[in-house]
Every structure is written in C-alpha cells, then in structure tokens.
Image (cartoon, rainbow, N blue to C red; front, side, top):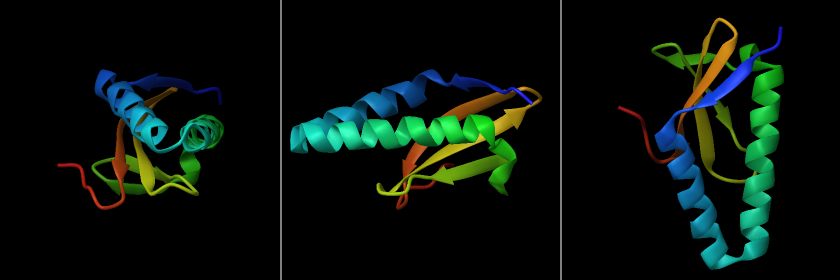
Length: 92
C-alpha cells in the first residue's frame, strides 16, 4: 500500500530547531541528523505497520544514532507525524 506522509506544523518547527541546534555544534553532525531523520521517514512510509502502537494509537520510530523518536499515527492511507521527541521527553 502507498502511504502519504503529512507533518504537523509544529513538527517541522521542532525539526528545524534540532537542525539549528546540531549546526551550532557541528555542520557535519547536523547533516548526519538530517540524513538519519529522512531515512527513518522513508522507512516509516514504506513499513508503517512495523512499529507497534504505544499509546492512543500512536506509533513510535526511534532514530538509530540520535536519542530522538518520531511519533506518528496511521489513518487509512495517510501517516501523520506529529511529534519529534527526545527520549527523556514524553508527549502529554
């Protein structure tokens, strides 16, 4: 099945903030984060059911190198990414 991916506005703001944060440390690190994030998004798009439901219908995909996770839901043929959280944060 082909899934469309949709991002909540706040999610893209979080992503930009994370890129800015890593750019302050190192451009190389920011590039690594950017690449890993979009690889995981591509994987989610191809295999969204691979991730178990954790709470209220929300599935969580963890990044491999960075301590962040992508929180998303599936509604028919649309995947909605609504949060990028550090592992020490939680979504209310």
